[in-house]
Image 1 (cartoon, rainbow, N blue to C red):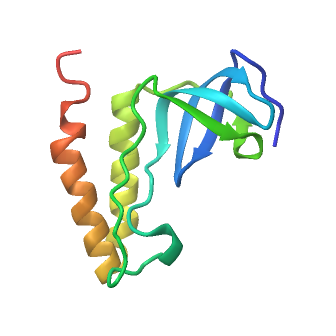
Image 2 (cartoon, rainbow, N blue to C red):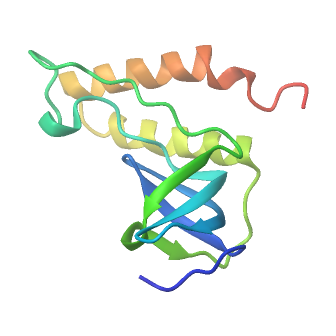
Length: 132
């Protein structure tokens, strides 16, 4: 873990997703980070029973929104020195990458995760970037 300071850009892992954002506050063992882009889409399903689809609650996880704030434990935050991509484009790329990974193997989990991701893309993410 490299040190990050308030106002600097960081890459942070949060609830199975990874985001690029700006450090807003140092909160002791955590940083408050404002989301600027999505690096990796959050995983779908039950994180405590990964790859299971039966007898578990299959969670639908949305990516955090542009400028949404998150409290992230310091070990999960790393300096970011690249160019911050456009939020909508980064979300689209993160979805594409996750779909590609899920399509590598035909399994009940991958099919359900794809179905959940496709529903999010149609019903939630389709509105992002349109008219703004």
